[in-house]
Image (cartoon, rainbow, N blue to C red):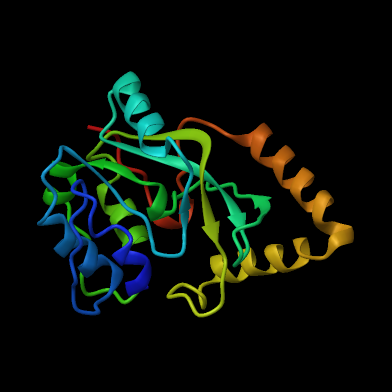
Length: 203
């Protein structure tokens, strides 16, 4: 990882910061202290942003007067090969987030949670900020063993899909089937799960 980071050390647009190992929410809160621009975006180390991601989201935020814009994503294997279309109908993955910096300062992550701080944040902030879904495939979610979320039901489901899609005879079928589901069900808002309780109204 250090070798990869050294490639960017000479880029004056970037500032590389070393932080002690902590839960994801705590790391993101600490990193926010160094943000000087009005918008912040997150990208976990094993995920892949595609060219133009933040530009598309920023334009969409202006069009919809949003505080938060999530984007859709592919499921990719450890080599970065696309294996399926993800649905992301309830909560967008953090690597897809583009959020007003002041929103994140007013509503920081729960730094004490070892995992799931994004889900807790999502439920807690619903009704308090304007969230929208940009239903365009702007990034890849890399499914690999040993990640922080590997033990979660959602990650286990994704791992099974990617594993099955790795079988040559099933690859095109999985890709086509998930595309049809994604394309026919995509919306501009995220769906609230009843298990979260009563959905707060947007202020």
